Image (cartoon, rainbow, N blue to C red; front, side):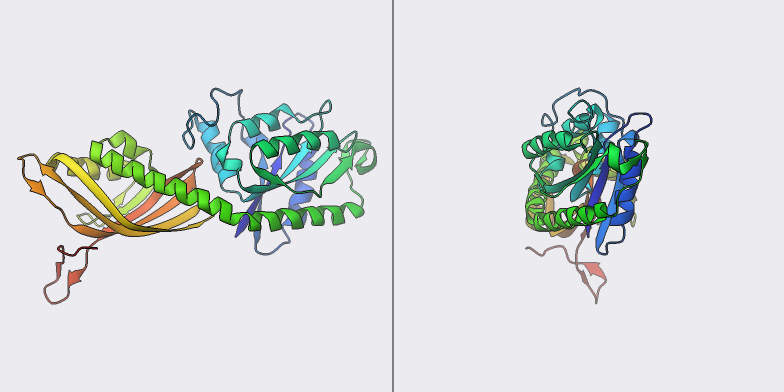
Length: 326
């Protein structure tokens, strides 16, 4: 299901944008097969930038940026509710754009603006920002002059004719968000395969810190050894640490990885094998297992929330079959 974020782009006390964003959300919520979420910048206080957003893609120096990346990354498109301040956008909204980069790309954007000139000049600038971030801005927009759409310039009372303009805007944002899905999926698959590459590097280096950045905090793992499940990041890392104690040198292979990606959820399956040299110098080939991975987009990065490793078993003996090869 396509998910559209309605971003309330003002944090100023006494803002009128809250009324406007609620109007957009209530109208949009009637649409089937599309999820709309109101995203208020007041819930995502972002300070001036500490580092460029492309310095470490998918890895953020602080919790507030990670939370913002998670909110943006979960959406397939956006409707930005923006004021116009001094012929431009609010500082809060521009800062929110600038904190991220990859999370915006390949998505659609539409604008509902308000101000003395309907916010039109703010939207002109936002279209340039969208171009730089590879956001596809749709042509229809909703402009709300304070003099005609707000009673006493304060209470939002839009004319009925504005509903048609809003419906057209939403039609375009949903259509473009849907059409751009293949672009987002392609990028996501490349990101996930890169994450799997990091797992292989981390295992070969026996580096738990590398592995820590790949699994979700609440990961649930069904491995080939007891117990039935390893729940949580600490348990998953402890299991890998136990494996490392047996090896002087570890190798890991992953073959035939197939991925299916949808929005912020992806699944993959393939064949994996841990091999290497034991502490006593013995070389072991290990065994091939059937590997399944479930990923979620969390904090702007794809994290493993579930994995499972298994081998077939012989029904007659009840024993696992460990000598099969892909």
